[in-house]
Image 1 (cartoon, rainbow, N blue to C red):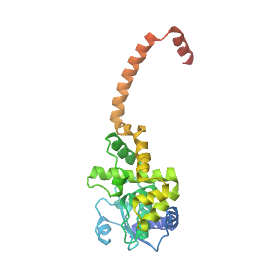
Image 2 (image 1 turned 135 degrees about the horizontal axis):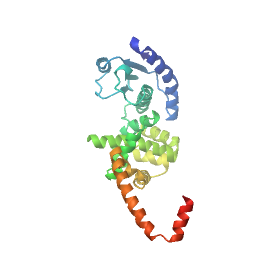
Image 3 (image 1 turned 120 degrees about the vertical axis):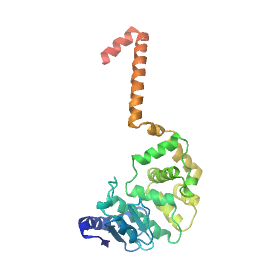
Image 4 (image 1 turned 180 degrees about the horizontal axis):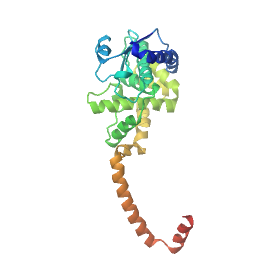
Length: 268
């Protein structure tokens, strides 16, 4: 069921059609059932967006989910502030929260699992997340799997890194162990099994081995250079590289044997 104000009729129809397909598809992809009906509210203004909900949402929230009640609240396109994610992506994100919340029941859903799966399913993992991880690599401050399993840090910068790493770890699981591994982790942890046992049963590897594979892969890659590649930095590095490139090339030409110069002229 989708509830809306008159101006959002077209949006409501689109979301209703999308939800009809998305809910069973998402549930199947993570090994769950829908667990019952969902009600989607499209709030026409910020006041109603806050007032309709069981508890007041954060000011920055674009959508919220209440698994216990099967409720999803979305902000109308007319009050969204030009965010890059489509409303369908936001809906898919919140659907994941409902499905996981229902599966875990009274047990809290681990934050990394909740946010990581929602970002990947809704295709929200972006260049901003890559940049967050790159900064973590550069500053040698990536969170370990154990740290991630304890919850998100209070520090805003560290929390953003944890958010990005959550999606990255879910993507890592998909890439290296297939979608079956995530289903096993969700099933195991929703039954109350601990994080380490769930990881081992899903992948056959210990938390230390997985951590080394996951974080080690980033530390050995060129990802660390990402924060240095802003437009300003690119211009600066470009100028420096051009100068030194010209200097080295000129200097090198003086030392190259004549036959090498002939070869170079042929290739050019």
